[in-house]
Length: 440
Image (cartoon, rainbow, N blue to C red; front, side, top):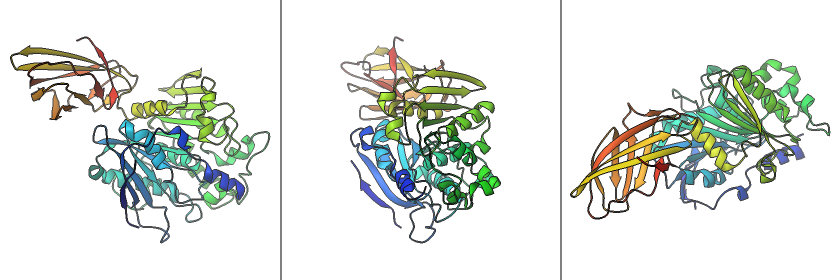
């Protein structure tokens, strides 16, 4: 299949329900100008004519470049090969924030059994990283998000970086398939415990030879525990994994809430980095997990560096908070301050900019942007590479000063010409986040 470029402003009924869940449009802001490149083949179709090796790429019209990338996969109980569905909705949320979005499809369980689906997502990640320069993506800032079986795929990709047995030989090879952070919604983990964790009112028979889990691994799950263990994200947890957020409704009828409890406990035991948002009353739908009616009621468990915090209502499941989590995991910074000072003489001035990381996660690689209100024109700079186009200014770190730890600062300076008024820029952004301005 050819890529197309455009401009874009259990079993049975249970399978149908699983395939239908997704990101409701009413969670997304109005459509944002973007470039959409659809049906990119990241590997040859297998079988011929299928959609499991296609991806769609949505590139924002605003924000810094190279762009961080968010990979999306919609769940289908592993029965569909069009997981890139609704990536445009995700792009409507994240493109205005400067993120590129890739919707990725993988093969269905009817086309290939596990570990084919993990081989596919890793092949897509490798293809995107190998082609990062073409699409102005930042190869060091890849995140992934998915729901249900797409959440499982998210957890597998996030936690199994460097596991040779799961790389496969699909498509592009010789490139890293690692991601730097992930967000998963109501994902299955330990298939063998799902029946025991079903709600008292019932649930899907996961032990059935015709269950989604059995079809995925190619055998009734209780008869092939070794294969099931390989398909369990918990099997790959260690202290070096990227930060992972996962969310689960306590009233989930299809994937028991206890599946995420098991994963959180494993990550905590391994001194990993995880945030688990448990939402009371929510079923197997993003619309319910993200429903503002639950705000302030969810239990939030966070573990990092062998420590743990538990709170109620401390992190509402909103797009804004998801974006903040991703920015922290990608080491872009989540909040900042800027101090700006000048020294002027006739027709020219020197300026200094000090950026402080006021967030709780490090910044590794920074870009500061602003716009002049007058005719200021930068002529030279130090401790940063500064480019001006019209009134827009972009300052990038000078490598030796690229790291800004929490509570720490870096500075750079420049010389410029100006006539008339020389007002302080109205707004400074650090990696596309607006910074508070403080006195120099």
